[in-house]
Length: 100
Image 1 (cartoon, helix red, strand yellow):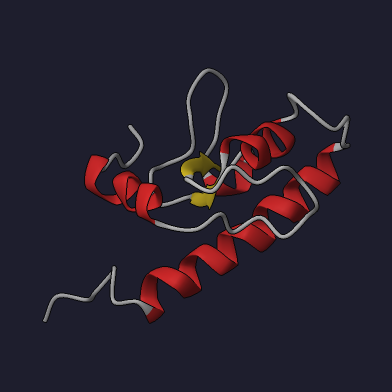
Image 2: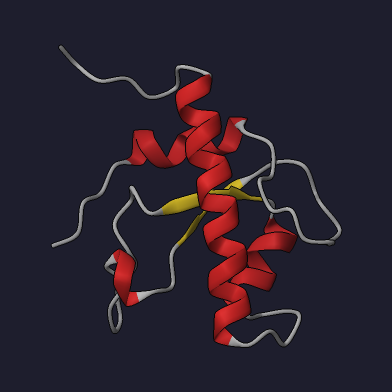
């Protein structure tokens, strides 16, 4: 069973889109899960809820392959770039914290 957290996913809704490729950004972000076995995605189930980037619906469509016609490596690279930007945003804005 993969890690699930509604509270963690809900953080995306208050974040800017972290996709840096050209697209018709729609502002409000949604959590865009990894589509890679490396991040725990498998047949018929999503990656864990820690493996997401904040992306507007248009960017999410490109990364998930519903738009753009990108090959697997391009989609992986764009998701990873947005994931790193998402993590930086979450930690720099104190949206995630380590319990002591």
